[in-house]
Length: 559
Image 1 (cartoon, rainbow, N blue to C red):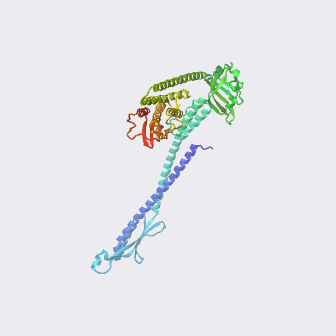
Image 2: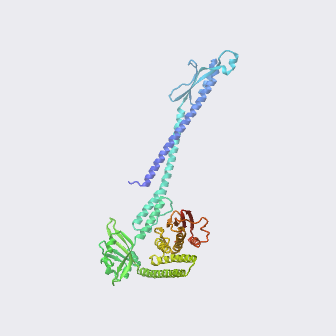
Image 3: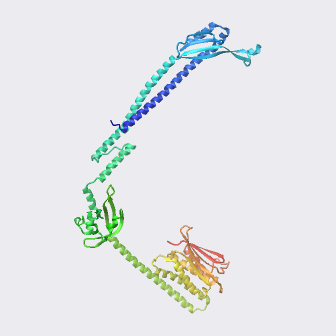
């Protein structure tokens, strides 16, 4: 006979209740027994203490009649089987009853009397000068028969009551277990059997919010999942026919096993012409299928299909290896999406970008030529000017124009029209300035330290003009006469600041600027232009005086 889980739980619950009832019954019986014993002891002690107190005076006077009356009065009490009064020598002066059984409990109390320590009158009335003297003993024996009878009665009552309570609790527990667990589980077992026989419309009740309720929910979800995955071949074929993307199933040996209508429409075949053929027939490259076999799955790999007429169609292929339960390869499922329209759009965009790139290069080239014409006109104008100040102003203007022309020349020659290699630009700019101030660069060297920095045109032009102004000022004023020295140009990223700030530093070891010149408020056109360009960059400029002059410009490049 098989015992179910609920039967086991019921048996364990009943056993637990029985053990708990026994323990509680033993506890209450022992508690009542102790209470009855304590009550008996207390009543006996009250009797014997009363007998001792009342017999002191008669015992001193040896009044046997009074002692007999006391003893008989106590002896008449319930459960008293013996009552005696003995003198201090142990002789029984008065007594009643005998001990005929060992089921008795004896209580003994000494009969004490206070006597004066000496014979003076004061000592007879002063308790402090009196002492106690034993006159005899009061003995009381109480039968335990009544107590034992009460204990048996309590035991029987508690046992009967406990059995009734345990029976009721056990029946209630069994009923609740059956109602809460046995019946719902039996219903789930029955429902599982119905589902196993194909009844996928069965719905288990989900009213409970516990493990059985969650089990019922899981069972219903499993049924719904089975209804979704247990479909007919016609249903699967209908799905394959309705797919917009091409689908082909290939065996491990490379033979086409199944295709859908989208593939046949794309390549111009019917399904009978493809099934059983090698999959290489579909691809323009024979190595495509071998590359699929080497990988478990691929996603959106660009390849080309060959149609029945020989035309190539670009496609995006996704493929996944099918495996049996034992792990052996069962075949490959490939899906392909025609991307001919996308490729045509990409080609049009590429051609359009190339045209715009050519146009932008032509614009930069023309701007560079126009700036070069302006620079040449300034040079020709300077040939007819005798005033030295005017010559210097024309030369400065020509250098400024040249610095902007170099930017456009770099963009014209660069493959990246959005950014300028600033290191190469500064190298060309300082080379031009060295030529322009050839009389100074014989004794003054210009060094640049700029690594891996590219700027867009909106940042490069202000930076180029700033470098032009500061280097030109150093060449003109920092090294009077034949004084030798060096001009340093440094640009680096300051990653310690939020947003990757750039630091542009131009310094020289010349005579330095006069102390009365304020770089932010000056009549010098060059320094005023520097301030304007720094504001254009949303940056800051700092002048450090020491052994020469050091300009530090900090700004954040545009993105």
